[in-house]
Image (spheres, rainbow over the protein chains, first blue to last red):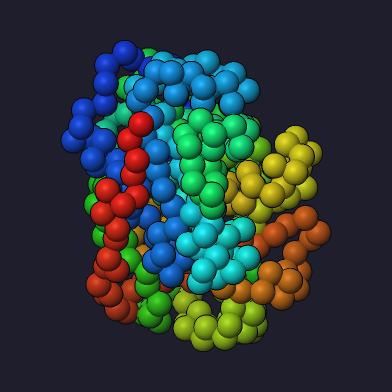
Length: 171
Length: 171
């Protein structure tokens, strides 16, 4: 699948088939996470792949009770490594760069997933402290996105996008 | 070009050929920006495509004097629309979601660019107030990434990545 097609055809998937994601696909998704660029190539980010049912349930509870997450075979939590980024880049590293680095990894994963026929959705509404507690995150790791994923059991329509004229300014 | 290949073969490009990026390619890059997902589909982001030589020079000055930027035919500045995100999501919207939304748009653009043979690089080290002044940004738009782009005049080696074991935790 070409890049442009994956970008345009990716949808947010919230209903999943029961089957697992094969290990080789998981390996490829991990490669996609790792190969996203990062500030100073510090790669100030960690990724939690949660398969445990009880943990998925607790994560859903910390995410406004979005129960659909429990049905995803994998719930991935992307974390910004503030400590690593701060060491080289101070507050700008901890407050911005590592958040961006973890986030763009997620984007790469979502596109690589689309190519493999795997659906995913970005969940941003969650209690950071609660998620940190559920995962037992060490201090300095900040969860910045939760991504339930699995084979799609729905094919939603594309939500509308703004026009280029609304979003782009030429100077 | 497949998604996985684009992710793994994308490099940060800081030397550019003199030729312009054709308009149809620019159109495709803009589509890539627009089709990235966003919190609540609010699309709280704006993109400045700077071709003006004097403005590029001033942007480079606000980015620690990274002069190579001036040789890129286009310097794109991605901005988070804090006002739009805050309206629906309050502080979490303004401080996190719109920064992520603008950032993952940039990731989509970089991969779509790679597919078109266009090189780019993420510049994060810049003075936000200075860049806002140069572009005349309205209040509430925060520049979060500068992306010089053009046809590559170099083919740098891939910087090393951490191993999956260092970055991924299974639970």
